[in-house]
Amino acid sequence: MALGTLAACGGGSDDDGSGSGSGSTDKTGTGGDAAGQEAEQDDAPAAPATQLTVPAAYDTGRGWETALPPGAAPLVLPGAGAVALFDETSGTDGRFTVYDAATGEVLWSSAALEPVGESASLEAFATTVNGEDYLVAWSAGTSGAGVIDRGDELVVLDIFAADGSGDAVEPLHHVEVPGSGEAAPGGAGLMLELEEDIVVGVDPATGVTTEYDEDALEPPPTCKDCDPGGDIVALTANGPLVDDSYAYEGFWVPGGWAGEDVAPREAGPDADASVTPVGDGLVIAEWSRSDGQTIRSVLDSASGTTAATALCPEPDGSAAGAEHTAMSANGRYLVHGVLVFDLEEGTGHCFEATPDANAVQFSAVTDAGVAFGVAEVMTEDSWGGTPTPVQLDIASGEVAETAPEAVFPVADLGGAGLFTADDEMLVAYLHAG
Image (cartoon, rainbow, N blue to C red; front, side, top):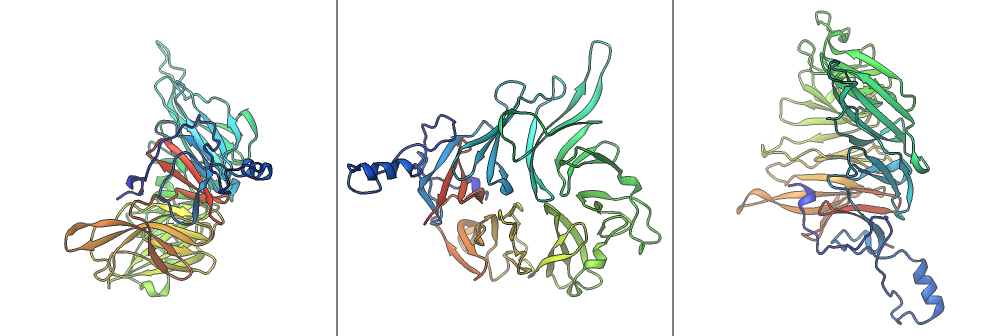
């Protein structure tokens, strides 16, 4: 069950979309008659009008809120301590607005952006590359079409650095790539998957593009009879990360490291290997053993160096939920579905369903090492499990239930938790205490 479907205990807002907090409370208990008390209240953050049931780590009496554009999701910029919204409701164009996560102050807004071609629509995402946050708006369509000329197919990207300032900010880079395809975060760059097995990497810092032909990717030298080829699943600082080759069963960076080079000893020689990109320069590699257990390691995608490892018991065969990925703003903690990692300590833990334990699917984690998720509590009367919100203290391993109707943050940064209410409001509550 998705966290977004958990009920909120109340709602409603008279927010004007400015991103400022609304409402006020008398925190003195005296009616606020003293001038000093009134001044103190004027300086204090206001209580957002939207009041949700949230974990005790957050103070619902201090924060801010703003309306979410229809269909928009918050775009988190952890290094900047900011969150962006992309609004495409003004017609054919769209624009970014970036808010300080703690105060709701508008830090900057972009110029209006137009999609390529009349039939194209704009998409947007946030990504972190080499420790720097970027916002990207992209579209794919036909440029220059007329009555006779069919025009040229293009994928167009407008790239913004997160630390912009002012109004109507122009893109850091405007990139046009010939062909038809889609753009997405790619790890150590932006990745465009085009037709005919072509992948184009885009460096967001420079706008430089690099084209890769998937059919020409060289296999690891240990596979002497393997033909070139494979699927690019991410970009690394040393080239593409390749997986799912018919001849070589594993993953590798051509001319660099391979999964067989970094497999933990406990995996054994016959373990099935797979890899999943999870963020800026990181991937999770999985080795499935013959005894049903799996070993999952967080690797540096450029070198294959192991950052943390978790040993997962044999699952009970129940259906797994969606694997949501989140990292703490300070980069120390990583959650991915049922997995929780402390990258500083090099440790990991798996909360997969077993005959003796219920699964927990995590969706957010704080700099203090508190992870939020939903346990699928199995009982004799619940066929699919009863979703129960929980929070985990990663250092101690202690799991605690929260209120059944609790809403968890989509991110925690800048001293505040960011929440969404009914896909209509972005609400920020400051840390308690």
